[in-house]
Amino acid sequence: MKRGSLTNMINTIWNLWTATEIKIGCLFSILWLAFNTLVGGVDDQIQALVILVSLDILTGMIASCKSHSFASSVATRGLCKKAVMFLIIGLGVLLDGAMHTHMVRTMFIGAYAIVEAMSILENIDKLGYGHYIPNFIRNALAQIAREKKVDKIDD
Image (cartoon, rainbow, N blue to C red; front, top):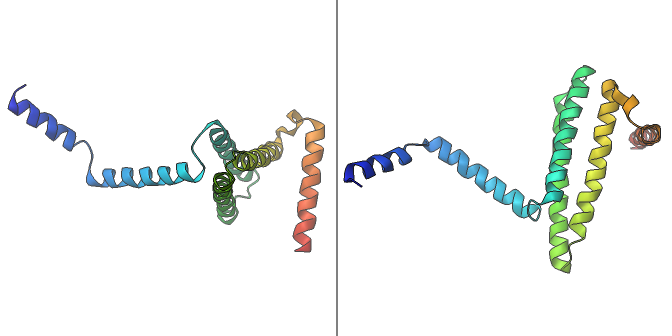
């Protein structure tokens, strides 16, 4: 290999990214490392939960836009709840490490997955496709909604 072609190759590689792109890449790498460490690794359980959370956010935004009730404060509160959910899963990772088990994290993920699935079904019902949801699930969701309203009045 000629000396000039090696220099050209190094210059080409060196100029692939700008300084801003490298900084953004480093930032996201650090955030990914923190998330990965927080949730105890990205396995099938976390992947399923992330998919459910994404579907919940997407169906919630579509339902609120369809009913002309989109509010950024409600969306922000929902996103904060999702962030706290992953922090609590991190707490489960810590508890599992302290107890030398693998059950607390799994229980937290399972509980949150059920809540997310119910929220997706609720959003589907709000979109007008509730007739695809079995009646016993719709009745359970309606009961939960009534209980939520009662709890808000008591607060």
